[in-house]
Image (cartoon, rainbow, N blue to C red; front, top):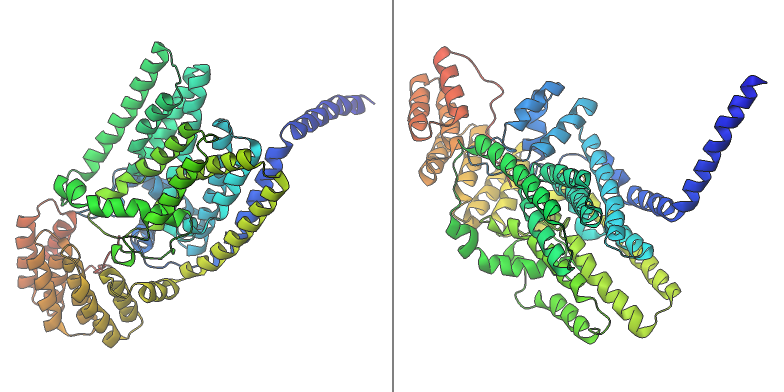
Length: 553
């Protein structure tokens, strides 16, 4: 009897609390459940996919042996993401998530894909919460999250394992922004701390996060938000500490590398490409531009890319009496500022995974236009729901189909070469693929084509890769010739010296092998790889694990 009374007093309040909670958050729970099912219907089969040999080999496969325990975290924190002399990227949060996956699955590719799907699901939930926090209706917030969940332009971020970096960036950036908005409303120091914490994680995930403080300043100015002096001071100091912490770690880790990008290349030289890229990305977000696996500036029409932005601007003018231009300006700022860091790289490839975080700015613009359209023309809610259902269905089917391009190495690169046969990087990757399958004639053919189309910055890499192909064909003279060309093309690139040294070692010419590395060490004394190889050669140690690899970024 006594036990029954205790059970009653415990069970009854619990049931009442559960019922109250379900009644209060019924819409949110149903929305999350729908989004969860939607994402897994589109992406769950990706857990059967393989690596595609686009950065995943460098980021995961080559590092599995170094990810055997949790103690590897220290090495990952103090390492650049690609572990190269020319690496400009410091992204320890990404590599730590790969470590966690590796400890669970032991390096099997399927689990990394599954993990991406989970991260994407979490991000879609956060998109819902962000729109709610920005005072959008629950229906609008749900529509934004559902479309985000299955948008075809975001497939590369989910189905391609290294695309996780942009998903993680979005997770921490959105969380930081939500808590920033909250602290402007309630002036709680705890919200500032949480905002800064997630901002710091975003910084250590991807360099793009440096744009977040600018977004916050624009938000407060556009919406006329007044923050107390004390709150402002606390916010500025906290965010400054986070930036200095990140800058310090980044400097320590990358200080020994060779920085090859000048200010002129980052800003002035890249301006025409950056201008073009912005409009192209806007078209991809609106699905008026074709989504390519490996898009290059040569694939993009100079006139056609202006149409989506021009049409959007026209709608804003026609609906100006019903549009909230603060929302539209903020959406434009979000879209452009989170794309800006991708423009400083001296490359002309516009990868769609970079749209993952900027896409939210596009949604703000479009949903504001839709809201204005609904006000002006008194659109029935049922009509809107039917339109939304059809749109989500069409996007889901398109995204599902597109995921299969990331199924394995052949699926990705053979489709990429069909879309863009004039890309040096794609031809180079195809060359490596055929070399790995033992078809050295085709490998040589694609390597020569890659050299034909190569721009100055890519030539040394492709020369190294060509030399590797001849090495595997057992044509040592040709291999030496191409390794020498690679060294001449870029004397600060390690791979040319390492490969040439390996060829001479293979010919039992140890003296010449050592001399090449000694000459290389004089040119790039900060190279740990060259120093290690040189010491091992002098001590007579064999390195069977050494692999000459052509790295694509």
